[in-house]
Length: 207
Length: 265
Image 1: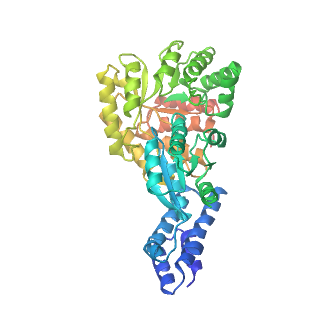
Image 2: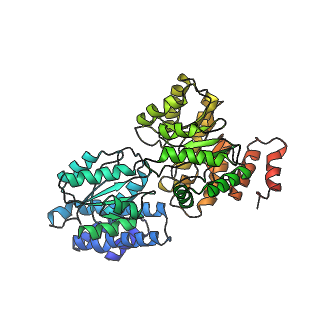
């Protein structure tokens, strides 16, 4: 038994055994943070890297994320009491007028896999709902998704609303029609092309 | 099969640049290629240009139709852009598209009410994206009911049941195909229109999956698609799928596709 098995279970999308493996690791007395960081999170980092390189595909990334989540469910109640904290809270949502949720969900799962606390506001989210959620949850980052050229202006509106509310929260944007140039133009703090890239970006922004 | 050529779309880099530079020759060459390859409609989309969409959509329509007799599919949720293009359009256009999302519905319904336009009706509502056959049928029902109430005949409605990516749910291909059959059963004279490529999002060899998916949907009753008509394997697959689904008497269209070197094994 070792932490390597937890890691391997995520990499192999082994949803059946992950719960047992994580529990056994904890019974052995392994530090919770170590199980989280070296078992679950580093496995998801590997999966993300494989995905970005075209070695793994969306359904596999989803399975890995689901496996990771099962493991995380065992750790979560214990993490609170051990003084361990998440990498920070990120608010995510698809902007007003846009109903696409698949890319946003994928990013949410990967961010969770990267150790962040995720508050998912869903789709068709008003700028003021992002502002409220960022305030209430003391979020470090707000992540905005748009899949239509017609809803991209709502990203700008949302970022403006966050700034006007005086929040020091960072923003990251993504979605098929969104580009780095557009992100810069509307004053987003960061842009990522894919879900694993969003994790890397979020780590940079949160540090 | 009703083919809408998808290439004149501003979100494609070369087209976006041609629009900005007023490069009519490029747009004309794409339109002529699509026409020649068998497109029944030439889709025109200037969606990335916020504020200038009406002016650009009109220009695209004029430019494309200067080299083809084919009608255009006017691709915008903005009635101002569609009206601008309608001012110059020749023939009977396809409006791409109305949906059950309240804002879009309210804005576009007056544009199509009482006309003989072909209308793409996208199965999407404010409640979100449909995932099951039942979701799609329920939205299609309301779309057809609402459009026919405003004197758009059923045979001018092209329902887009909305393709969702197979990689995120293993039933998404099946649910789409079943919805085509169910909508066709309920409204026998209805037509379909759909973009296929979303099915293969996040999976390798996307074109391979897109073609097989199309063949399966054709069997269920799909009779329209927004595709790249210059994609020969796709056009060959359409001909084969229609013949196999019993929609090609004496295999005439299949043989025509064969002679056009679209059929490759």
